[in-house]
Length: 210
Ligand SMILES: [Zn+2]
Image (tube, rainbow, N blue to C red; front, side, top):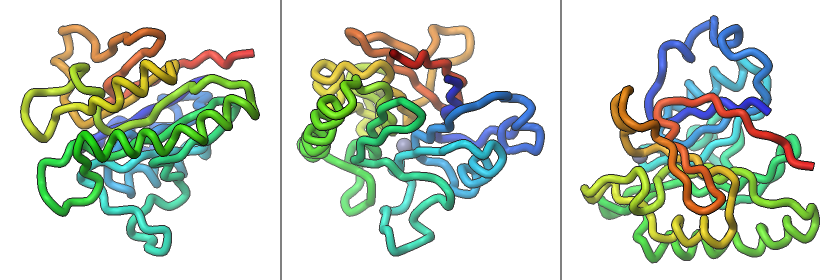
């Protein structure tokens, strides 16, 4: 299963008519937030595969009645558990709150509540499909992993707990800058979970399980 994940920065190589040839046999596109919706719409129409995304702190507040608040032809999975092509995915958009009254920003306590609200759907998914959680699509990193010390780029404590309890195979995020090219790749392990900083894009191959 080939997945193209994008986040934070528009990449000319992807925003090009040649993109389809550059990534053959793609199965799925995931967006980790803070990208212009036109870019997501370009990618979904170029590849004709599902594109699931979560909003970042620079994205508008989602409102199902307002077309300007969502990317056309794409699926905003913030606070949802969904199954696509045999994979179970959960969406957790937004960043830490660093500005009052801005959309898609949350305190540490608010993110605990958001994470808790996914629990019934995850348990139901486990009962119904017997499946594990394959991929979390998030905007912010977990606290202490790929995050920064400044207020706007602190990660969420709730994500660390979530990873320990639900053991997703992959936790994808953006929001923070990965280290420069020759330094350690922006990928870490916490228990069974591979945590990957997608910013600005990564091609990920995921094994389908039984
Ligand atoms: Zn961000």
